[in-house]
Every structure is written in structure tokens, then in C-alpha cells.
Length: 178
Ligand SMILES: [Zn+2]
Image (cartoon, rainbow, N blue to C red; front, side, top):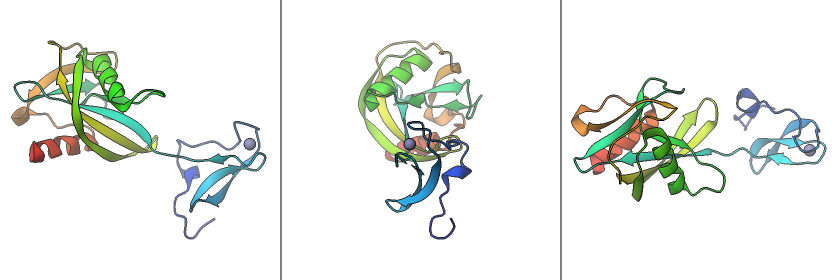
């Protein structure tokens, strides 16, 4: 099926599904709502694919320092990044941000605003949507969680290069807009 639909989910390793998980029917590609999608030949279930939501934390302390974690897992393992993680089912975006923050850094925080919402291309998930929150730390001290190698606050003029492009954009927007 070539032509007007350039997007082919079969190309993506994140979507190896070939049989219906509901009825075990064989999946085939069909145009649904203007995009090629997998549709079950047995029960006609449409396998919609959507971006995966991520919550990211822009934690700013009283001295205008930013809280970073040294990532212990891919992608960007070993690089500094903002605390972040996937939202869970039934969890509000801001609750996801505060949970990830505590898990990765030991910091309890308070969401003070939405910094921005970002698009991120992902090899594994194809597309992520990153909701970045402004957060004020409510506790002193940091403690690296299982997924982090290190945690520290950095002044803006001594920030290491962040390993994830979206996080660099979050920080760039903060430098420009305050
Ligand atoms: Zn089916």
C-alpha cells in the first residue's frame, strides 16, 4: 500500500502486532480516519496508535537552581536530564510529575504551573507528548532513586548539557521566558 499514506506502523519496532489480541484474527492495514491503521479481519477492531504521555519536572529552588538527575537508564543513559517519566493510567498529569520527582530524586514538590507541552520523537514509542510542569521543592536534600545515578541542583550558568532534546527545549524556553 503505497501512495498518499507515508506512515507505516509495520516499520516501527514498537508495533510488531500482527494478530488481534481480542480474537486472534489477522491484522491488515486499512485507511481509517485518513491514516493507515491496523484493523482486525475477524472482529474489525481498529488498532489506533496515539502518542504516549510523559510528565517532566522543571524544579526551581529559591536560588534559581534547577534540579537534574543523571539518568541510569536509556535513552540518554549517563546524561543529565530533568526528572521525568510515563504517566500511569488513572493518574493526573501533575500527580505523575510529582510521583516521578519523588521516585527519582527523593524531593517532595508542589506544582506551581504548566511550563509547556512538547512533542518528542521516540524510537521505541514513535511519538511522545511531554507535559513539563513548574515545581517548587517542598523538602530539603536529594536522594537518587533506582533509575538515577546522581541527583543535584545546578545554577543556570553552570548547567551540564542535557541528554534529551526535549529537555533542552524546556530549559531553553525557561532561559528565554523566565
Ligand atoms: Zn479481532
